[in-house]
Image 1 (cartoon, rainbow, N blue to C red):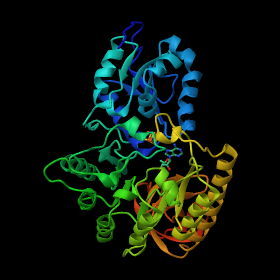
Image 2: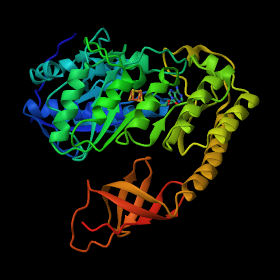
Image 3: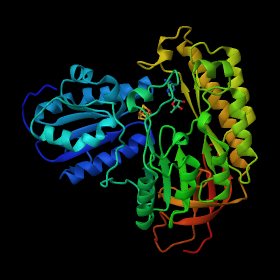
Image 4: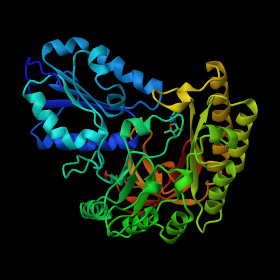
Length: 450
Ligand code: 5AD
Ligand code: SF4
């Protein structure tokens, strides 16, 4: 670590912008809590901040470019005494190279080092302008009592950090380090506290929650943890993300079936419908293995929404492989999906593969996936018209005079409500009759008296 002293933090104010996944969003809640506990206050603009933090994502090249654009835009601000920090996946991936590319940056720290965040802040306050936290050599998770949650009703809980898989396209094992599970005791204590504080909706987080393994003597697996969290007083909904089909075992579906608190939604990223491409991706399952899991879900007692992630244009993906992905989409009939053009990432084995699919072809395939899925969603959502759904109210769309709700099956359901007393319904659970549907959301009416 180099040291060169210039001005200290002008005021203990900070601004943070977060990119990427829910893990990152939740890391930011913990980072904010830690900063506040050290006497900092959060401000809403870069202008008002002494310390500017970017919690970054490097899953695709585009996400990575965003942070360098931001740093470029605010370069001149550093001269006015502002301190810049890069956190998260780009920080871990690029490391000290960030200081060369953006010399006005003073802090570079990956998520596996956040347990040292307090100490790193002290170094910054002491005037150190090259502070780093880049070690991946940890068996710790970032547990803090200071989490500043953004939402008063829904709360994230990390159950496992890092990833031990080595999917050929994926940068995560390099940016988030090896798998570390929290003890079931600490997860249950956090969930219990959240229930007492009035949170009703819990989302369990991890890069691969299915491979959760309690490090304490209790030795719970993921299905056991899921069932136990769902049993906590006050908790009405539990979701989890994200799953890996290889580790998605039947007891998970059985546990969900046995407990309606576990939401009617399963996100099971398939990536490709071609066994050959899945092999090249090192996904550790075949198309048939994947479809067996879909069968468990479709034969379950409840109807679950199914969503997935798809990558088009992986190196060597032929037209025939691509057709198999479309065919799988037709077979599964996903309720929603995220589709991505393959983007080569540093250090990954796929970045060294030949037989790249051209940008134009990737774009063509992406558009086909999106159009095919849009037609499926129009049909799936239309099937829900006339039915009753329970929603948790998330907010109000004043312009449309509607409330925004989320169903257990993870759909947005915008609805009207007869209440004219100006009650804030956010956080309430209401029954809503679905009256109309579109490709991405539902519309309905609630008659529930509040
Ligand atoms: N290129 C394109 N998409 C990717 N994803 C992960 N890595 C890449 C990459 N290099 C997608 C996968 C994953 C989702 C979070 O992002 O579909 O499930
Ligand atoms: Fe992005 Fe992956 Fe890091 Fe999440 S874990 S921020 S998706 S690179």
